[in-house]
Image (cartoon, rainbow, N blue to C red; front, side, top):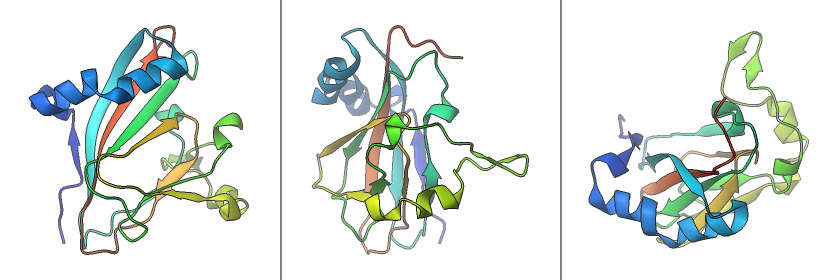
Length: 170
């Protein structure tokens, strides 16, 4: 079942997404956490449509966007209701305070951490669900992933990442 998975940079083609990226309450929340002089890093719409079986393996975002510091926040705005059945974000609370884990296995970049790291902490996993319009803020070093959508309803998120002015891309 082919299905649309991602729209990269929707704020470049949609006034609604551009306005949300600039003016939504999430911008103020990020400023409270990492300072008032924010920069927008990127945005995307991620969808898990019914029957698409899209799974996101456990990873940390920081290795994908390394900076001189970790003052980066990813905001997930729920465009659809997110339920336990439609593949919610799963996180390991407190993992953002721990080490950055390798996303390489046998000299191949997999974009995921070793399954053993997650298995040892599986009892701590929290699933992030909520109504359409809810927001989840996530530190760039937080371990997270998500299971496939096993429902008959879509799970779509608008994801934006902001970083502090003193965080310089490496």
